[in-house]
Length: 482
Image (cartoon, rainbow, N blue to C red; front, top):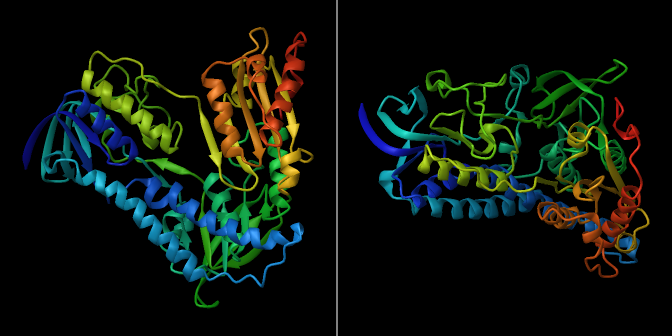
């Protein structure tokens, strides 16, 4: 057993871990980067990049099907599954290669392989070969898709998104359990590529939407295209090797208690991800933990209590998206290097996007958060995209945008939307939110014609109208059950 001494030890070499390592080095400290699995970020290997490759192929197929509505009649559509997946894997490997190039640039003496666990504050053990003594530690261990044990017993055809991007061909059918970002994006993409897809959701949620009106509009638009079963639980999963070379028999239970058994080539578990903190020996680090076993930390410094331990990325279970992981890793690494003189880092306006159709985005404070922080005393403006000019031109006229503003100050607080070009509208609104603009100031900005952004102006005008009135004693939107 060898012993290594360092000033900063970073556990995990994903997006957050690499950002933390670089920040610590930029702070003039010696740092070690520890990784137990394959190098390459979740985003590049099994997340945002390969999923967008699959979505891009699906959009191309959808455009061919939609063309006759414009008076354009292409020839018969043929989807070559092997070619689709070959491009996904090839481009995925290219993106992973960029990450590996970055890893290669890190000095070999700064990289250690093995599973790390705490022996005590500032003391780690890697497998059975190395003891690390560090002045400060950054936990950036990422997360893992959740698959219940009873589902795993149904065999290898119960998968997570991690396995999808290693397919060499498209399957005949897939049951997607979960209508979060991963489930919705992959489910719709596979459907548009000719796979028989059914999506199951225990409740009525769609991605990260909490605004009941936007959620209802989004669910209706998606259900027009997809087989989505809301308020439906998975009662049982069983391997069915006698059917077509191997399938999974899925039994579901709807809200009325009715059971239904169907067979699928695969069942994709997309019910969430769990932070990888269980095997770290956190009890030896003497950290206070929440009810999920995650260290309690300051969201502005990423410091765990008053200790020399910091946490970043998916491991803290706050905002599991790449931009947040990079920011959190940078803050954690910087403060690990300057400990004990920690300081707040830049936490940007929250922005989450689902690349479905309609696209879905939540910006700034969500409806649910505002019902708590503002006690329901905030104004709401809205616009439907059904008759919005540019949206109708593109035949993408479905969805709704709801924007939120603060009484008194007139400040723009956030938005939830499902509609065309939401990835761009979301950025526009996030910048306004981070700049602390008022709704009046936003309406002073230029709007071209005809653009989808004109829908933003319509919603802001509606919001300005409501902000001009005295707030009522109770916001009816925030009554229980909405």
